[in-house]
Image (tube, rainbow, N blue to C red; front, side, top):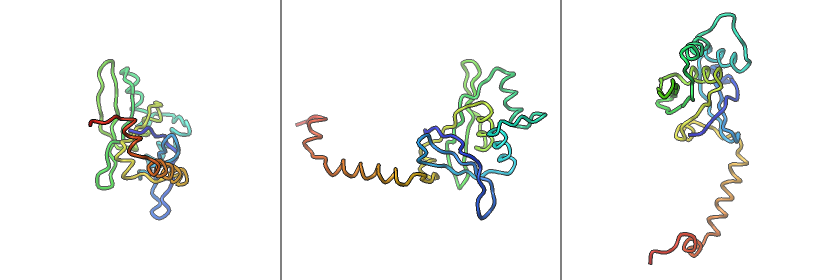
Length: 164
């Protein structure tokens, strides 16, 4: 799993649908997730530390967690099936941990309100992320190509030994 942060909300240029954009710590990969208008407002409200006069749904969830002495340990975006992302809230109460199914947008909105980390499975990132820093990716690939091209069998034998 890779920890990601919310980079912001964007609008799809064609459909005008909101997208929450997650980025990894190195800013090398971005994961765009299409979300609804209400979820976009909820995420933006959390990013801007807005406090509504009355609790909205995600605030209510946080209040319930607090009243029952539960903590949101983390959010995991664990799969992508037919263009739909799936997530889970990992909630802890004492020694007991429970996994609660959630839409990624709702999970992110609650995570932002509780400062819980957002983790994404590597398979999801491989399937749906977009490169942000192509130059760094190319430099890393070039360094690996150079390493492989200079590698000799004797180096491996010295490093790992021989069975013969």
